[in-house]
Image (tube, rainbow, N blue to C red):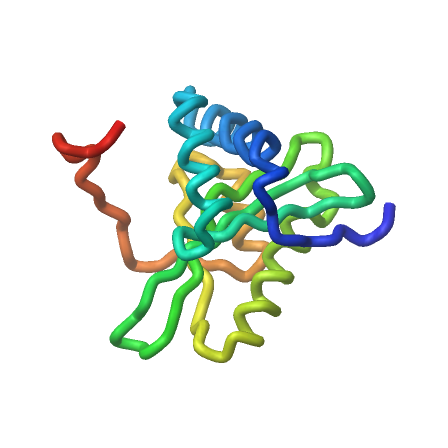
Length: 157
């Protein structure tokens, strides 16, 4: 097969991104997401790049994988970190360079920006295959632990 092409997702990709996120949650964490809430969340991103941006890897008409980036400003380092989120590759296309194409594309885009200082992601501790794949791409464990307080009692659902 030819090299994977990476492109920004558009509103026309909504159902593909929703499908990938449903599969990702189930495969990586055993979670069944509320599809209508997820669809609204994905649509919010696709309609407002300030919330994040999805990118898709494809060959011809076959969309094989996705990644979403969000941005975090680091005052300590005076630059942006891009967080890789919702990373997913269809099972039949794993180990065929899809994830690598997505990450290399983002690295190139980040370096062109000039003010992006690094890529970050969080991965479930039990996702050994994912962790192995990320390590192979040069991502490393950090000393940080992600903590959260969720959901807020007043959060819109």
